[in-house]
Amino acid sequence: MMRQQPRRECWTIIFALAAILALQAWPGAPTPASVPKEQMLENLQFRVEYLLWKDVARAQLTLKSLGDGRYRAEISGEPLGMLKVLTGKDRRDSYQTEMIWRQGKLVPLIYREESRKRGKRSLKEYRFDYDQGRLELWQLKEGQGAMVCKWETAIQAPINDPLSAFYNCRLGLLGPIKEGQTFKVSGIPYPKPEEIEVRIGPETESGRKIMIAINNQAFDNDRGVVFAYLDGDLVPKQAWTSARIGTISGALLPGGQALNGRLPELPGGPAAANTQDITAVPPDNLRSFNSNRD
Image (tube, rainbow, N blue to C red; front, top):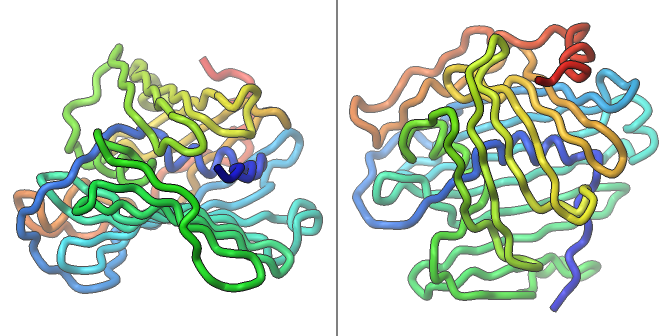
């Protein structure tokens, strides 16, 4: 079995923003409505803070409709300032899921993890073959430009990738979110079985507080905890985590386009995009948020 390359520690919060509410999805086969291809449904920008650096990186979360019930969600990040100098001007990391609408949920088809740094490209694809009941890991072979199958397992129960699960929750497809609820679901079981645990906290002045425990090699013992505040539409406004390199924080920036809770497949048809400025955390307030998380 191939050893998994450690995910870059500076990108822990970027991954966490996408994995805030990783619950579960499973396939079926209704006929979805058609929508224009490459239609942007959501575009959110986040500021990442680390230690004394208030703007160490930027992250972007997008959701696009590809037509015929297919969607693409992506969260990507790139460094700024000194971190950009240290890691390379072309550094970019992204997590992307292609999914389809089936049985009232968004179901993952391909989940990608990609990193570009100093002219080198790392790419992994987790391919969900529901007809064969199989999940495969394909990886770009260095220096050859070809994808090679490195691992596979049978899909015997729902397997969750963070992005499709996140949007299923955002759209209310997994039931109401209530204080005191705890969800435990299976993530992608590579290189070892993974359990994702989500605990729903109270409503506060900053929003709905949640906690998510995930496997990530940036954490001690490969297991860590991420906290976040969500607004009324379950958009992550603030998030923070403590990894081996210290506390990393993220905050939503103004001016983004937020999904307003509807897809063409849901009753009521397509929803008009919400293009108004999003309320965000002022830069000067992020540090006080980090020092008073309760």
